[in-house]
Image (tube, rainbow, N blue to C red; front, side, top):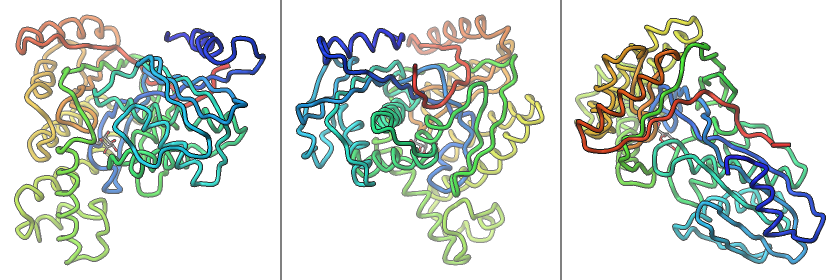
Length: 388
Ligand code: GLA
């Protein structure tokens, strides 16, 4: 089904057996984050890249007043009168497209009766942003149907709102942003305060090797929510001394040295991670831009230690996956990527070594944990786009 032409045939077959109505197809990718974890909601810096896994959306107008959503992955359809979409999430896959329709409608876009078929290969619950891919694919498809355009950064913000306000998962902006704005063969350094960004080319000889620990990740989980609350608690305490600290983005290691003793121990550790991670992320983008891969790898390694020890956002399996990669030929840098408590590690690997690296890591991980991991050799791909 990776083939958009197959989705077009499926959609036409379901909804337009006889009619000559045109189906449009759009794609929106998942992402991997090279560095900058749990910094987005602190208005800091992140450096993700879009990946080869994506959600495809086929869309066409209807004449019967219905909004019909179909997910090929679940072989399931939901249908609603266009004027009365459900007001709240139900914990179902349809929450994501419905959230986008609701937010777009609240932003003044009249949603017409339509059929939307979704298919995706972003592994679910792996920390590779399958939900953002569904949201951005839905938004791009609906706008395509309406013949409307929204600049990528704004589109990302609307999709983030769908997840925050409708799905009620308290994520930051990173995933939707990179899914909407990624560029082939580039990582993107994003300033989550003003959504300005810089693209950094990923050298031709570098592969993104994504290793799935097979431990499920979820931003709706308790871990993500607790950590975010701890980050905000630390920020509020620092702000009593320096009111210009609105988010941890505004705080420095010197602030922690001066007032850290007032912050409860766990929140202090989370703050130390976020504050140092922001510095590392900007430094990592500079290193990538000047092709200093050794420095980039060193920063990724430091970032993993900080994520695991200070943020306590890793899990034994992810630490194992990172450790097992260290002495394999071709490794530039490895760390746990995404929201944490499971999911995938990202390994930057010299391309010529990528296949043997992936095979060796798979075998080592299987031997040491008994779990069969999925390992993918990816490249940085384009953000959301129509497929002609
Ligand atoms: C999840 C969230 C993002 C970000 C990361 C952690 O992917 O959706 O907004 O907070 O976790 O960096």
